[in-house]
Image (cartoon, rainbow, N blue to C red):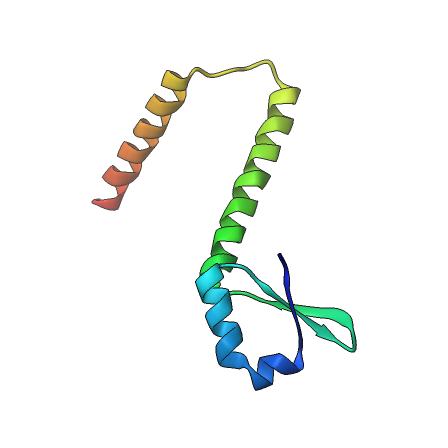
Length: 95
């Protein structure tokens, strides 16, 4: 259920709003003159949403790329390629 509060509650009840967003991990929607104005959320919740959004975007890009080519890689090929890149990166970090 969405938590909707007037924007004046941000000033008058900041501690309560802060507690709610941290305890629930959900945003609080603030209204001004009866219309949506802004959203308040914890940094942790914001970062988690950003992470999910980035993953979704990468999956969309991969899907578009998969439709444009017939090249496919097995799980083993992908894992060995990643391990090789990690090993190469580790070698350059110590040089």
